[in-house]
Image (cartoon, rainbow, N blue to C red):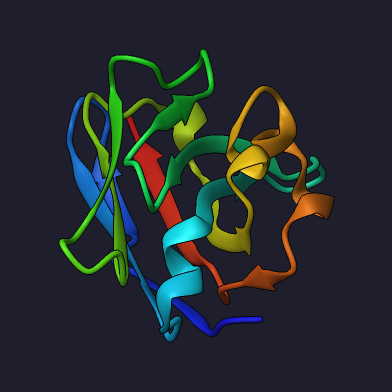
Length: 131
């Protein structure tokens, strides 16, 4: 497991932007086979996969609800993953978590959407979007 720490949440008006960051303690060549995903969870609902990135290749996946509005990216070392959120809507309000695991296939198909596939989690950061 790796240590993850999110930052960047807060309150924003609808139509605005926010950027979340997830810093990882991961090291070594194995990390280039890592998959990192941003999940979100609204009260009373299950965690929803929002966006995924494969550290080694930069391949990305997005939930339909955020395509064209959110962008997942990483720094050159693959140690920080970002979620740029634009044109935010009230329904984007949630606790956002980053999660990580090893294995390129965890970032493929629908695997990245399943929270049970990820062993390492951050503590979460809250995003609140108001009208």
